[in-house]
Length: 181
Image (cartoon, rainbow, N blue to C red; front, side, top):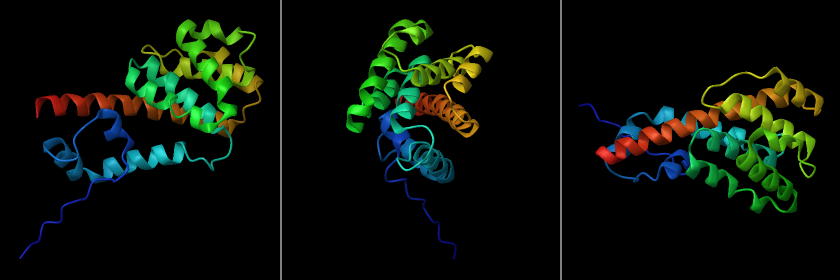
């Protein structure tokens, strides 16, 4: 006798929350059948936004994530990442201001007098990687190096941008599946 083991959904799944999908139904069953993909996606989120991770500060990571989502035409995801910033306290105020400037003005905001050079470099690099027509801008890479980001921080930032652009596509796919279910 063979017993079918039903995978359990990930209890704290940020991608499902962003997609607004039901915890039961055909899309949830499909995701449960691919539990490894769901678990690995959540694991990537957890690693990239671990408050104890060294290198990029949490406010820098959430600002970059919000900007990457905005550039990927995913306003709900951009808002969800941006809404995490105020909980980080006063250190996040400059990140919020820079993020809002970049969303409103694009990379032209990088030279704004009130924008921290490190954060401006991070957001400019995010822009170079996350636009719909990516064009690796050597000046963006040079700028993060000049802003004293270490090679591991640049790699982490690039991974974060890649994850967010992946995540917003998964969210769009889950919403489309949910709409047809």
